[in-house]
Image (tube, rainbow, N blue to C red; front, side, top):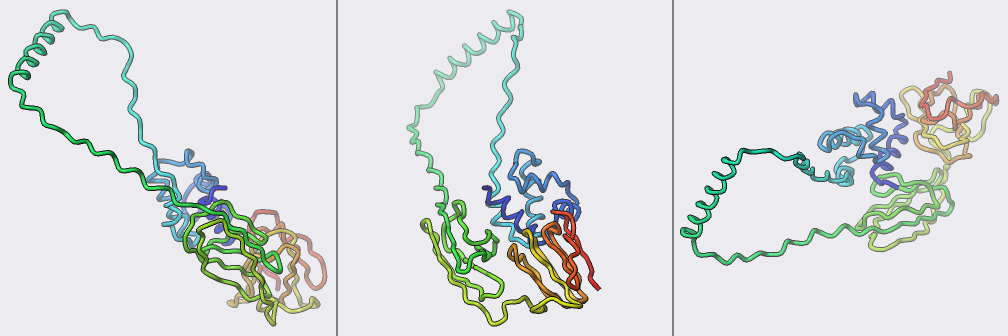
Length: 287
């Protein structure tokens, strides 16, 4: 898995943006953002321009661009084109004059050359070693918690990551209805962690009510989707709930979904079906 593209994709999905919406905000073509998230660097323009696109994209998604730029591969040096084939015919007199000039020049060099000096050739310094990488495995009780490393979302537990750059990292584990767990870890070997989360007194999101009824909106997660629920200027909920969970809110509310095809809407106890098409972010108001 390409760590650079995966960070970009996950951050965009958490923002509830499609590739088309992100490209319109940056005044770029969709295929440029697709190439960045797929790590198809050969499909991007020259490195200096592509790194500028990467920096702008990271800032749009609320990410620090410097770690992402460090993951962008260095450009390969350009090779000189081969010399043209074929022979150039020169007049015989020109070749003879050139030969005599070279012969005279070489003779003058032998007469006037200085004493040779001893040249000490030092070996080239070896390139710096590549940073060590290790895998990280996180299991939580209960499972299904969201895992963040240095603020980047990695996935839900149980989780096994590809090799990550070692060093001191900040690991955070979150699950709705439970107190978040956060700790600094030293990633200097393949690491496996078992995190036990503590339930809170009020496991429901702020603004949600415990049971559906008249004047209630129920959002049932049948797929993974980012959600934001607001009531006027007040934000009742924002995040990515577990698949299979239900969120209940008093009306009126406005709902923004990153993947409407994974959210089933139940209004006043009546099933209204899925909120929209899969993968097409949508905002709906429920008065």
